Image (tube, rainbow, N blue to C red; front, side, top):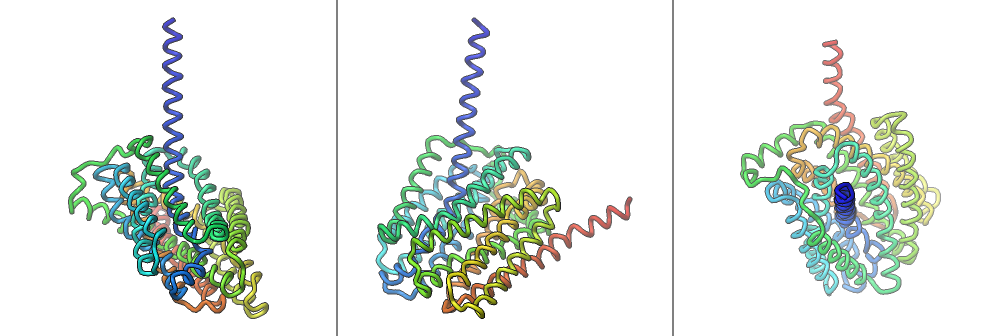
Length: 425
């Protein structure tokens, strides 16, 4: 009888643990994908919003970059605060801000309100963009991070590609406001799960960390790490170039060429999504054979080739769907080789030594990555969109600068250490 009771208790505890793990993974998925969905879902609606709000289209394009600016800046608040009060409370507050911003976007009737409310949305979505990395770091050891990280990467790749497709369908059947209605429902669902099911994951947060000295010391540690700052600069440039497609691509294909929003969404999903999926599989197979550094270099090389082809195809074919989409698909493939390796390099070379300040590390890393989208996306919004040359130029310049930063900053830090080790040997 005693053995039966003990067995029953063990089964209940195991089931409870599995349920908690499922809630944890679901929370990480929802919060990590929130920014990607929110930033890209209305890309197919740019032209229609400009017409409806009677505003130049470059202002609507800029609203996408403004959202990313809000996400980027908020990282520097959520990260430090999470070291004081934990991850759960900042996440709830951020989701509430995101919900308010989405409601205002849904009802807006002029471009100024849209831009301001998109910035508010970004301030809210930044909680998910920042907290998921810290929650991930809090909850799993290195082996589990590799296991669940691969799964998470696949989901995020699908979400990035699927968001414009979803937005295109919503635009085609219900109008552009339906995209913001979807974000309202997404935010509500995530708030409910975090409020009633999610449990705090941080073991190191403490009120003592709410002081200027600890703040400066924590960020000082991170900024002084060339490896950390090198990888974050690489992601700044790479993610910025990637995001420029969502600011410029819809205008080229929908307004200049005449594709409908649904077609644009399907092109992004099947063209870009398939390319990213293949890139993920290719990276997983080849990285074990050739190493992380080789795959990073290959990724940037492919991105540079994609930008070059976009210019070449413009000279040969003009402004056509093929001349724009084919290089974009190749660019997506190259980008997919960068993110997993740069993220892994950041974890191994940067996050690992800073486990007790994971909130600060996650905040600064995400601030730099999303900041790239805000800065380069803003630049792309106000560049001429009468041809694909400006977009191709962004692909080329950002990719080349990211590669140079990797060689000069990241490896520039590693090589002296390797030489010193060799001399001691």
